[in-house]
Amino acid sequence: MGKRTFRQFTWNDRIKMETMLNMGHSKSEVAEYLHIHRSNVYREFDRGKYVHRNSDYTEEMRYSSDLGQRVHDLNKQKKGRGLKIGKDRELADYIEDKIVENKYSPAAALADVEKEREEKKFKTRISLRTLYRYIDAGIFLRLTNKHLPVKGRRKKHHKKVKIQKRASAGKSIENRPEEVQDREVFGHWEMDTVKGKQGITKSCLLVLTERKTRQEIVLKLKNQKAESVVDALDGLERKWGELFSRVFKSITVDNGVEFSDNEGLERSARKEGIRTSMFYCHPYSSWERGSNENQNKLIRRHIPKGTDFEGTSHEEIAYIESWINNYPRGIFDYGTAAERFEEELSKLT
Image (cartoon, rainbow, N blue to C red; front, side, top):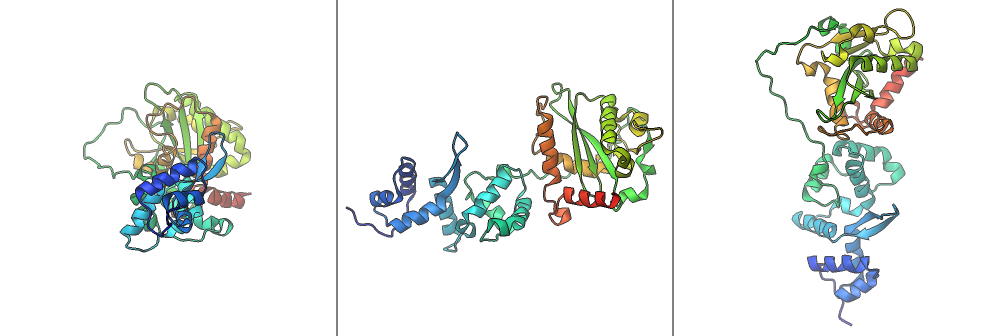
């Protein structure tokens, strides 16, 4: 039997350890084979452990030589200071799942950690800056920079004047009440469509965003025609009943052909008269529907541009809608749109 020592693991040691453990050998047998003290093996396992999902969807704790090496390298880079998250694998796994599986941003993931801290019994706190540094250093098993939301580049506004091909179908945004602009009054919405692969996807998503609470409604339409949008609003009116005119006081849209039936969009499907007021943006001025634009970026985390979502089910669309409404938002101190929307509804009922 070779003498066991407290020497440091090498890269080759980590590979051998991973191989032996996957073959069913115990940690004691690994220590014996590598001539490394057993306590070193247990510490190394903690550095590189992760939850592995099997093909039958059962889960088990495994060791990754790659992860172990990454943690080792980062600790060395930090000149001996311990890696905080390395002492709390439950926290590391939770953050990784939130960003990789649930498509959260790092800031939203950490906000969710704080909400769940007491129940999950997380032992460690890390800052947003530290989390980004860990991701850059590659200490996570699955989480890399490619999983982070892409920060959009600021668009350059050119002075070239574009000519609108058709007149606005209804009232200009210039006639919209002042209360809509400051976002202090509930019930004013923006509406847009999200389209799939050009020339392939016939259907589209109709998205409505409430300006104050950022509550999102996402509906899949069979086509991109004006009559389909009117039918969708008719369905929403029937769903909300008498509350519709109080929840949907106004809707702001662009000048797309799908919103060209102003009369059909405004008139009630349940009774005589109008159900809401429609306002139309200036041509080529998408920033006038800023809430829509930001919310659409969240949708694109699930349905990237160029995707043919023809086969996407209504259940999948409902999941995306729920995900957006329950996503921690920095503008609400990491509360959610759903929480604020329910608060506003409670005032009406």
